Image (cartoon, rainbow, N blue to C red; front, top):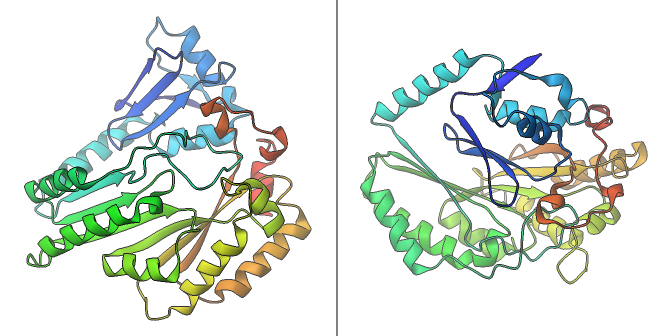
Length: 323
């Protein structure tokens, strides 16, 4: 199968010898700093030529990477799809029912975890504060968008929960007097700080969607996702999840449990025990969903040394995902 970069994607090599690919249509991107990656090598060998066709066979050992690039519309086998997407987004932007979508990092890339496969630099102490709230509030009020969506990401966004609570309250106070305005927000969090008290506070200011990661049973999860001090995080996260299950009054909560897996965590015995545990934990609660993703060498992006045992072999991804 032949693919090409979509007409909305650009690529360049930065001063760190990384190939950066960006899709301005949906703001998705990829950073290639592994000089042995097939796409890195392909871009290197064709940097003085216009790239038209990329044979999918070069991704034979990087199938997940190819799937990501296709899903983000960075690579395509049909440019007409991209053209139609541009037309669709343009038409939506022309309607009164516009969408303003923001991704914010309240705590920067800071985190209370030290996940073995993490690609982020947690040493940056920067935090979003009051001046950011004023700027974002001005932006929201200046747009004609009727739908306002904010996703809180990190690092660990709940390390700066005060910012989230204050910003959401500002937007709610403004939008409550404008019935046509609809405000949604979500958080991608490790779940450790999502205590009953904080959950209540976030719910009151319209943070109703969460993605929380649980990488298998306790002995696997604690090895992959320890706290920064080295202690396990499984017990507190599952305690917080159990509290959410018990809060039947929070009917419009939506919780996606993300599971990053490798060969070790996906042994037949362990995966069945884990799924039994999840079933017992959430029961038939329809507010919960599951997302399974293989563990790649994400830490290489941060020049960290990751034990190869933690990385899921690309040869086994499809088999393990469907077992």
